[in-house]
Structures are given as structure tokens and as C-alpha cells.
Length: 366
Image (cartoon, rainbow, N blue to C red; front, top):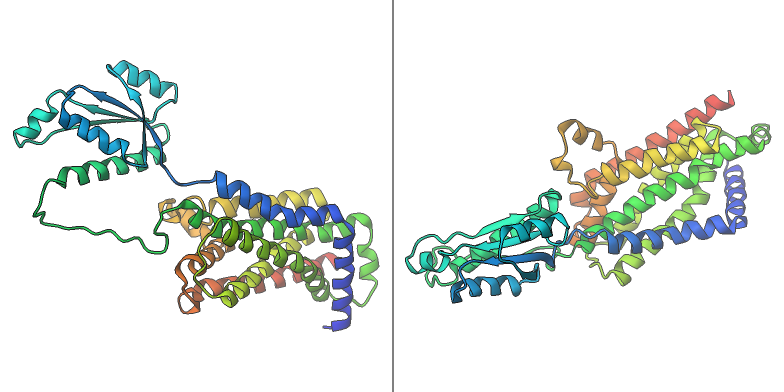
């Protein structure tokens, strides 16, 4: 491999990137747009749940229970109703998610030492939100029911590690950085060789002593500069705009991100080598980066809850491992002694895709 030829391809591709200022500006602005859009819009927090109260007891005891809901940040009392039909109407119109129904014998059962039941009506059309809301209700009622007990047999003391405030942005933003890099890197390089074929410049490159490995590496390094800039922007926005805690090693995060970028960029070049058409390359880049990064990486949906067959497929999705590393470095402050498996896969993936791209390009040249 010739350093001189490699440098020539790198400089040529870098000049092409800097000449297209609009595309370069979009490539650098996209991480900020994605982070601001998804960081604020994609919230997994369920709070201020619109709640109705149907109090059939109208006693100090029932009002005390209602005050527990009013004092919780998870519930927002929207009003009081006098019939089940009103609850049904408000749920049908998407004005409320939850209704608390206190039966007429609530205080009488409490005074007699019997179990006092409370009915909770939930809108189950959004099963995930309904499940979370039900958990909040159960926790509130459970804590309220044991408050009078002075000598409770169990004294639970809750301590949340790594995300004490339970803010979803601390969970979303590190994963979002990996997803953005996966998408941008694949799309940037998926058009590069296809564009050469369409413009007719590939024939001129083939007439030179340039080797396929030098062509792949030279093009990758030019876009790698843009990828590193995107990664830096993403981390800075995450730390200073969203105030996500950073507890880990900067060198580990930098090296891991670079290896992840290598694999994503090589994958885009491989796609570009497979097809000589920019439209097809763009479509393949979207299908092979955007959908797996969002749906199969554990970023939005928990992998443990997926069907077993889909769980097996996720093992070949590189963004799954990048997300694990970024979350571990950001929130937990763990090092390579814990994350070595994920790092090794990213390194293996980048190497394998590089050789696939070189081999495919050799086949095209032949």
C-alpha cells in the first residue's frame, strides 16, 4: 500500500467535500437537529398524567387519598365526575388517561380495619404508558396504605444508581449519538463510489496504479474527518445542552467512537461498491442503517422484550454495541474491563466490512 496514493485519494475526496458547502453544512448540522428534535421530543418520562376523580365516599379519608394524587408530580387532576359515563366520555375523547374511583364504603372499611378497595380505570390503547401509569398508582397507594404503620416489618429505602433523577434524556441522548453517527456515516459514504461511476470518473481512477484498498481507505478517511466533527458536536450538545452526566473516560469514548465510525463508513462504501446508482445506494443506506439503528439496537425498544429470533438478529447490529459503550461511559463510568466485548465486536465489524468493500470493489474492477 502506497502512502502517497492513499494521501492523494484522501485530499481529492476532502476537496470534493469542502467544495459542496451545502452538503457539508447539512452533514455538520444534522447531529444538532437530530439531538434537539429527538432529545426533547423522544421522552420516555410519563408524568403529569391527566386524571379524573370519582369520589363516591366524600369523607375526610377519601379526600386525604385524593390529596396524595394531587401532591404527586406523576398525576394531574383534571376534574371530578359524578358518573362512570363521564369517565368513559373523557377517555374516548383522549382528554384523560386515568380515573380514580373511590367507592362509598371506603372510609367505613378503613375504620373497621378491613381492606378498602379503590378502582383505577386506565386507557389501555397505549399499553406502555398505561402500564407505567398503573405502576405509579400502585406505588402511591402502597406507600399511602403503610404510612400509619409505625413498626412496619420492612423498611424499604430506595436508591437509584446512574440516573438518580430518572430523567429519560440521560438515557436517550447517549444512545441517540450512536444512532445519528450510524445513519450519517452510512449515508455520507454510500454515494461516493456510486457517484464516481455515474460521473464517469471511476474509469480514470481504474487507469491509475491505485489499488482498491487505497481507494477505500482514502475515501473513508476524508469522511472520517466529518464523522469525528459530528461525534464531537453530539457529545458537546449532550453534555452542555442536555446536561447529561459524563462519568467515564474520554479516551475510551473517543477510541470506541472512532472504531464505530470506521465500521459505519466502510459499510457505506461497501453499499456504494455493490451498486453503481446513487439512488439505489441511498435507499440501501437508509434501509441498512436507519431502521436497524432505531428498531434493533435497544435504543427505543428493549431487546430483552423482543422475540427470540429478532434478539438473535440484533447481535449483528453495530449500533447495539456502540449504544452500550456510550451509555456505560456516560452514565456508569465503566471502563474497557467491562466493555471489552462490545469494543471487540466493533473492531471485528470494522475489519470485516473493510475487507468486504475491498473485495467487492476488486470484483467491480474485474
